[in-house]
Length: 204
Ligand SMILES: Nc1ncnc2c1ncn2[C@@H]1O[C@H](COP(=O)(O)OP(=O)(O)O)[C@@H](O)[C@H]1O
Ligand SMILES: Nc1ncnc2c1ncn2[C@H]1C[C@H](O)[C@@H](COP(=O)(O)O)O1
Image (cartoon, rainbow, N blue to C red):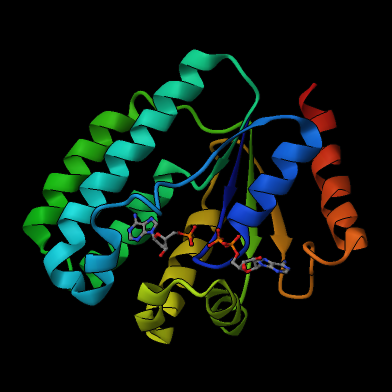
């Protein structure tokens, strides 16, 4: 069983992934953030570091894909390889922060990797509006993320909506998280578990 949690920066993916892994006894796979050699530089100068960062995330995410295929375990994954390409890289190209030449180079590598990628059995999309994302990013308090603009988050949100609208690769569960506090309120976490259980029952 492979479950993935998807959503914009600050939507709550890492928090929910951690809670679900504990609840169901699944293995969790997290993004390579704390030891990422490019992320801090990227936020200081997006244009200069966008290609290096995208290649790094693509490689790191592909290693996870390989592990999921080979492990045979129940895994819950914090963000998918699709988001790197269809959300972040595309958006950086739209914003002229990743050149057409570098984007084409990236896209041909992604297309090749995609042939080895299986969609998750269940994709859980944490849908959130921009003010809530800003609040959560501030709450998390990573210094280098202080430069993230409203414009950047809004454009990413638009990409997410478009991608999720056209997502047909597997089962999809959309959870609107703006009015949920699944960290402090057990009833809100319970509400999410009920929805996930209903989807999981359909898979067995
Ligand atoms: N629904 C929620 N209720 C309460 N706190 C939340 C919620 N979602 C996220 N948070 C908090 O917001 C911050 C960012 O969440 P995080 O899980 O790191 O987001 P993501 O992995 O999607 O970027 C964390 O401090 C987390 O505890
Ligand atoms: N592919 C990516 N391109 C640019 N930035 C990315 C990519 N994947 C993740 N990120 C950033 C966004 C956040 O600053 C951190 C962690 O992501 P989060 O959504 O907070 O879990 O990495």
